[in-house]
Length: 258
Image 1: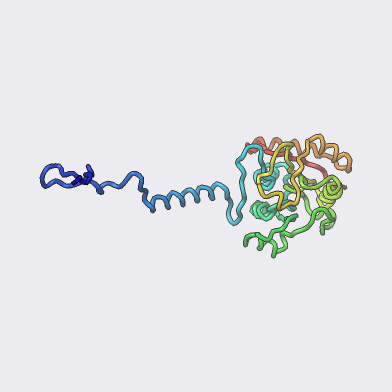
Image 2: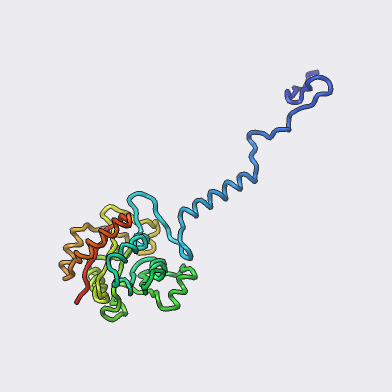
């Protein structure tokens, strides 16, 4: 009769000995609690990386070559305050996720702020809906005249908008922004070759962004009769340097129509 193979782990070390098998867990077996903890920790790290801000969530891109105009405006606010001084007391922001910009501007001393959202905001959070209910933020198609009187605002800031318009509509929209601004318009626009931070841009905006060069914009301003505000541009560059702010996009300062 053949003998059954003996498990070495079950061999007794002398009489009365005992086996160590089962005392230590198998190397291939992992604790369910440990796995769950690692998964949750990873999820929290990803969420913390993607979202920032109080009451508002902003997607922040860390990929080289990408930028978010809305994020750039928020970063530039201290430099804009130093550049424009009293002209920052009544500001209109036009662009995607305008609620977040308006929310931050309202925290600035002696600053009133309004916003125009050119796109749907059905997924707006409670803070944004509160701004809408107060009349501080509205949805409007910027390809058509805006419902404001001339020089309704001291300064108009636009981001994440003009890059999606064809020259046909730019010829109407940019002069309209200059019409409702008393002291000028600040335009945040991408460099050629840059990509937007949001991967869902095509489904939201309907068309890909068209990044235009500085020379293209200069010719465009001249064509529609807008003058570049060299004094404001210089002040902004100096203020940005003092604030250690380096724009990751193009920033143009143009005068309003008089």
